[in-house]
Image (cartoon, rainbow, N blue to C red; front, side):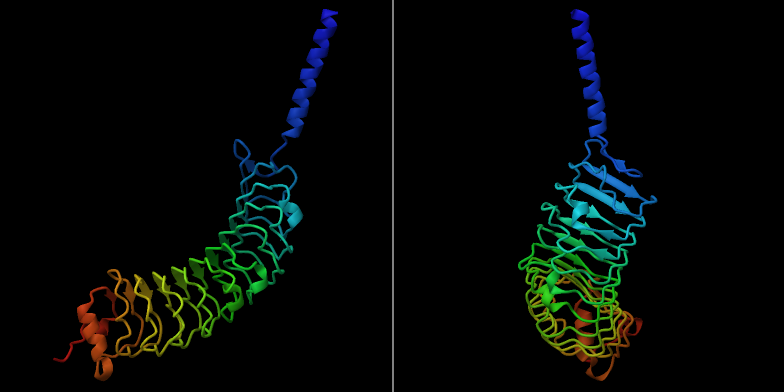
Length: 318
């Protein structure tokens, strides 16, 4: 009787061990799962489909990078309901499903850098308190307002390195909490009046390496929290005299690599917080004669500027 009980106990223990091992097959093939199952990394491996099978449901950080996966769906992400960070850098993603994030209500950071994304469905980034979204280096020609719900919690948006031809005004109106906006290296030609007005919390705005040829005097009137503004490597020729009105917090302004020859009277006066070297005007055909009196005087009074060589030797008339 005693031996029988012992045998039964051993069988039970064996079954529990087998079940436990089978149930904890909690790492997809080709991936690495950190102890505790909270972080999973699938990097530079022969994956052609999203590895939802075997993902621990305790996963909070998931990285799938440099693989051959072409799509991500809501169903794929349902396997990781506690996910907070999703990094999908350098894959071959061509599509995302509608309501993509409905099954990951805690997701805060989403990185989709260096994929093949072109058209995204409505509500693709809803259902979660997303804070950071990186769509850098894709094939997006237009960023639609339907991507986000009203009053999104997003604070960081990177759309650099795409094919945008116009500022996504409707989309930006849904992002009142935005602090960083990167639209660099696109095909933007102008900033429509009022397109940035709702971004009262914006601190960094990157518009460099576009095709901007002019700026309206009201372009930055609603962005009084800006501390850094990057306008380098555009085609700017004329700057309105009150362009920077209200930007008293600005510490860095890059205007290098444009086609500006003259600086209007009072242009830089509102910029009382510029740091040393915080204003870059190199690579512009600035002239030091005639109407350049304001420019020359301002440069002598402010040692916070990186100047073209010809302006460094400019002498103010008395």
